[in-house]
Image 1 (spheres, rainbow over the protein chains, first blue to last red):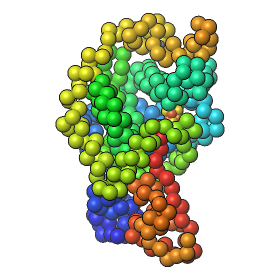
Image 2 (image 1 turned 60 degrees about the vertical axis):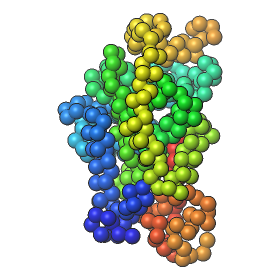
Image 3 (image 1 turned 120 degrees about the vertical axis):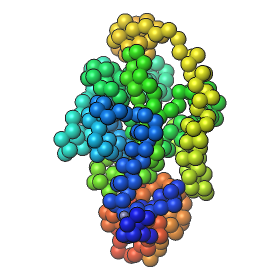
Image 4 (image 1 turned 90 degrees about the horizontal axis):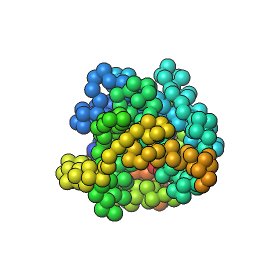
Amino acid sequence: MKCRRCKAPALIDVRRHNAAFCADCFVRHCQEQVRRAIDGFDMIQPGERVLIAVSGGKDSLGAWELLVDLGYETDGLYLGLGIGEYSDSSGRYAREFAAARGLKLLEVDIPGEYGFDIQTAAATVRRPPCGACGLSKRHLFNQAALEGGYDVVATGHNLDDEAAVLFGNVLRWDAEYLGRQYPVLPAAPGFVRKVKPLVRLSEREMAAYCVMRGIDYIVEECPMAEGNRHLAYKEALNTLEQKSPGAKANFLFSFLERGHERFVADAETERGELTPCTVCGSPTTGEVCAFCRMGERVRGRDGA
Amino acid sequence: MPGPVRVARLLETLGINPETVLVIRNNTLVTHDERLEEPDTIEIRPVISGG
Ligand code: SF4
Ligand SMILES: [Zn+2]
Ligand SMILES: [Zn+2]
């Protein structure tokens, strides 16, 4: 195959775009997709400071590099989840990436600073590990962004992630979640804006981008991910994608263009009155926010 | 598997959905129409993560 743009030998084919690219043109293709996502959804304004959530995986490290390439002032935040070997090595990849490029990486170590790890917390509050993990991530990224004066938190969610989440939401016809699923969550009092600049790039494109740019990322999975529903949705969507290339992108973008707005009202009615958490100050519907409540229970303060 | 064999055919034989992997030959990515020969070192790298 030849590169669609310059006719040099191609290294990667992207069936959804019916195209193949050489290394240079593929990198440009990825940059253009991120540019289109940022501009199309009004994700980041020129001059704003961005905090990117980095896990050491291909998506977050690739996204960080793409944002920097596009000229955005972007620092990283790595969360130590306390998931054994996986946390040790994913942290190493994040630190090495930042050091090699002279980028600033903030770190929050959950066991060190809050006295619990994700597995113990999940068991204590009887939630799946990914639920406890997601709650902690949302809370701590937002808090770090507020404290550091960042305008926006970016995450490495790609097209496959978003399509899989949509698939799950549609299987349950979860109107509240459908109303909230969008590549930009606007800022609100106590919450910074959240954006997903990789929404136009597939998981395979992100892995290829990292290989071409020599980004060393953690290939192993978080051990908690195994067998989760998210992976089953991805598999189902990829089966469709193989038969009709573009199916995933079409599913997601048709929803964002024509479906999402129909559910916005459902998301809004679910939001109650918010007051500051008495422990950390984050807006919450209760007295103590869900993250602080989880921490208190794990540390055994309320005897749970 | 004895070569030569095209990438697309190799994945099909192994029952792997091409959307879920990268194929890397001697440290370089290859497209699905590429022909793999006997002494090549091939890595089939999964790209799907569950986070
Ligand atoms: S797989 Fe689950 S526990 Fe592991 S990092 Fe992702 S959300 Fe957290
Ligand atoms: Zn080219
Ligand atoms: Zn709190």
